[in-house]
Amino acid sequence: MKITGFRLGLLSAPLRVPFRTALREVSRVEDIVVELYTADGAVGRGEAPPTAAVTGETLGSIEAALRGHICPSLVGREADGMEELLSAISRSIVGNTSAKAAAEIAVWDLYAQQYGLPLYKLLGGGKSGLETDLTISVNDPETMARDTADALSRGYDTLKIKVGENPALDLDRLRAVRAAAPEAVIRIDANQAWTSRQAVRLLEEMQAQGLRIELVEQPVKGKDLDGLQFVTTHSPVPVMADESVFSPQDAMTILQRHAADYINIKLMKCGGLSNALRIASAAEVCGVECMIGCMLEAKVSVTAAVHLACARGIITRVDLDGPALCSADPVAGGAVFSGRHISLSDEPGLGITGISGMRYLD
Image (cartoon, rainbow, N blue to C red; front, side, top):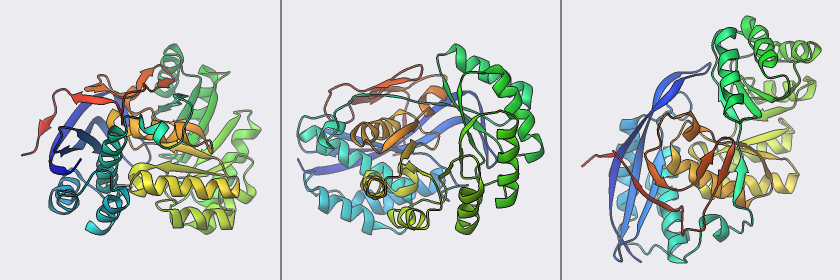
């Protein structure tokens, strides 16, 4: 099953409503898709979104990294030589974690297809379904309350609320959300927007007002580990590290310092499934639960994340709502989204059979 070639394409899908955080605003998903071809006709697919504010990558840089460095390093190699393939991806270029993740996902897709197994079973998983939260973008309180009501009408009972764009408004936003969803599980994501002392003060006030926040994600700058540790030590709300964890080494530092209560694993941050598995293993050793998250991706890479989450019990929280935020799904096969429920089939690999409307970048 030798890899004989590759093609890159642009997948584009509009969002139901604009996605707004403290870092960026996006109105549609636009991702680079990589397809790896083998001599016997198999196709492995991966996907990478441009998230310059987090990973430093753009559509152009992802395409250039894949076309000029990563994919050529895979052509001519056997698809069942996973160690060799993963090493080739890692060595091909420095950084570029999202581009590497796309190539890794395509390689794992081929590998599982070769053995006729869905990826989650190849990784040792025994369950084929999950429940995800749904993200509510940061907006004025009235808009966020309306978006919350819409999420409840679609069957979601866990919401991730974006905050931090204007800390003075965050309490008003959360009061509006809680009033619209009195029984929902509410977790919040500040996307690095607060200082450590500001975060503790706000979180104390949120809990004092009975807002019942399950956890706060990345309250301070990603590199501010002292600040993250301060919030974790003093906050009444459990803290999740996101932008502070790009690698297994980052995860080990967080775990050793007890700088967060949970870790958010994202394939695009850590460079793919191999490092995601290492992070999950480190968390298992330390008994620290993880969330599986995404970077506003469409269904190709989100399906890979679903397979990973179904294979590792330490992943207890799921934030894989990228496809649910889109107004249309161009991807045939893969994970099936039905409200908050996500399910996998027993089709080999990722189970993806095609992408409608994708423009190849030849």
